Image (cartoon, rainbow, N blue to C red; front, top):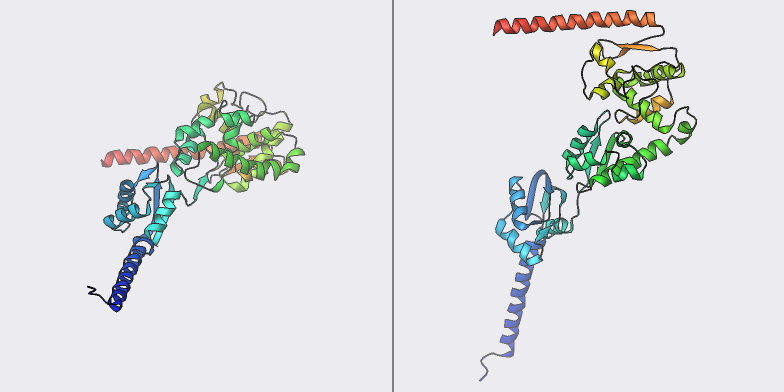
Length: 353
């Protein structure tokens, strides 16, 4: 006996279709609609290794990103995204589960901007790059050695490779390897210096390595960028006359410290001490920026042979040794006065305590 008419069956079928569509629509909405995950402020998410959903949820919670843990677990199981790639990801605004899982599951990173500062050394640049990127500082430090793969490949010493880390800002991916970072910076040096200034380098009396070495001394010496071409001209005047450079930065490099030099320091025997050795040191002492390199290629033309620091952080330049002695005495008088003031303040502080 048939209890349902054709009309009833049609109604049931229609209700089933409506219910199925409703379920499907609800499912699609939960998976694909924005607002399931909300980063109300700019958020930087760092995933160091291939990670699971539990790790992702804990990181999002720590950064105050809003979401439902149960809904996210259901979405992860439904969509099949259970593992997430290492990388740096920027979150801001609202996201669907699909958009977030797809981004992190495929490892679609957002680039990060790193900064290489001038006048640094192996230890500091390695720590700086490691702070900005995923590789460890020891990985960077190992590259700046004579025996590293990159140094050997490009026929460079560790010091000369470091000197080619051209100061600038670079957009890279956070997970980039230490080797690839250094290669990227080396490419920038080759592009802007080796190729960009090829004609000027070819016509200069110094070789490229010597230009970089002298530029590194200028970089360390000049606190005021406006003085770089004048300082470069002074050093090149000395080289042309066969005088020793007598550059304080080379002594500091030999000592491995950055401090005020003592009289005995100038007698420290070391290949880089330009008070004891003639000509340029064996290699660069830091990484010069482009303005320091250009200062060597385009120095001021003058007759200065001597310079001494001033209280303003610049230099007083002299043509004769007699003029230099007078300027140096003014500097020593000023230094003695600063030491006297410091001792007086320390004495007063001790009495007050």
